[in-house]
Amino acid sequence: MSELSAAFVRLHARLAPVAFVPEVRLHQADEPIGLWELTEGEFRSAQPPPFWAFAWAGGQGLARYVTDHPELVAGRRVLDLASGSGLVAIAAARAGAAAVRAVEVDERAVAAVALNAEANGVRVDAELGDILDADAGDAEVVLAGDVFYSEAMARRMLRFLLRAARAGARVLVGDPGRAFLPRERFAELAAYDVPVSEALESVRVKRTTVWELDPNPPGARR
Image 1: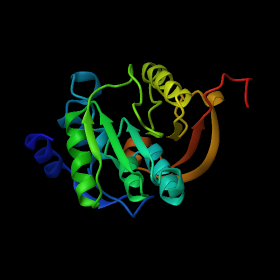
Image 2: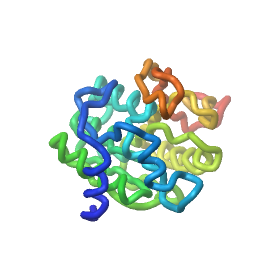
Image 3: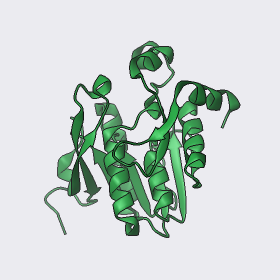
Image 4: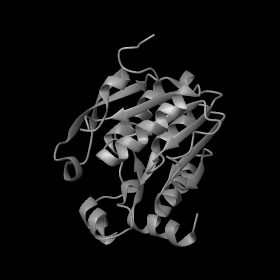
């Protein structure tokens, strides 16, 4: 974690409970648009948008499910993909995971994950990098919140998740109805009405589903 990135997170986000998972506190931005513009936005710079500064609906739903079903991760090695703030990774660590690895492509997100894990008194190994063309390593559970937000990301993510599931990992995603989720590949585990930022989502509540990936092709269910 670079000191510059950590300082940026501390300056622009305050530690507060997560709306739908109040057991967890995160550094969150009060006003999303100003921070988005400060980091130059998705289409004006190579700098990733500040996804780490908000508790997105998919991550909140998935973290709620992990918190309420600790047996999913207890004693297991967990990988949290596109971790953002680290919410899902922290929920897994709190639920008793043997080890939690959180991967992000944004250096500020890696700093946020580290700071948030420290604030919640848990250990999360925050890692900078794009691993979607590789594999899930020794992970026994793979978690991903709100990752099907673009067609290109969805294609790469699904390929990675399928490799992980076929290698024996349980793969769960949290998704608030994003257009590029391939629903035919997943089985529903739970659904929640999750509070969200109206400035980000244009609504105050998003219906969010936790899904488990079936590694078999559609039509070839066990």
